[in-house]
Length: 129
Image (tube, rainbow, N blue to C red):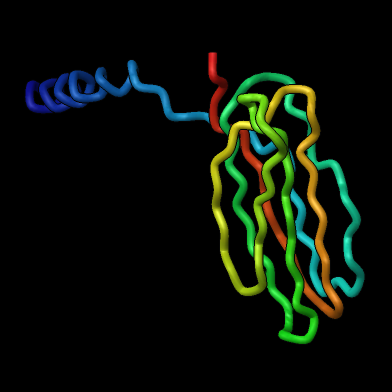
């Protein structure tokens, strides 16, 4: 009995530091997965930021050499400077962190001449407050 009590006490003591830790939280604000597309996608609004925050976009773009697709994500920078483009080219896996301006949409388009697939997710990592 004493041995069991000591083991339980040790488990409790070693688990206490974990109570004060919090895992980083993120929220998916936009996600798209399109397979075997044959038409280009015109400018499309993904989301409009409502607070100053850090975001991450992760994605990939696949297509044949004949389709030659490219995908562009566009946003206005949080510091008030001009809009910024993030371009995904065929065959790449991408991840990029950015801080868009509140109230101005983050948008994207895909240009292609043949069949392609595109997938990306935008996550809000943290607020800047």
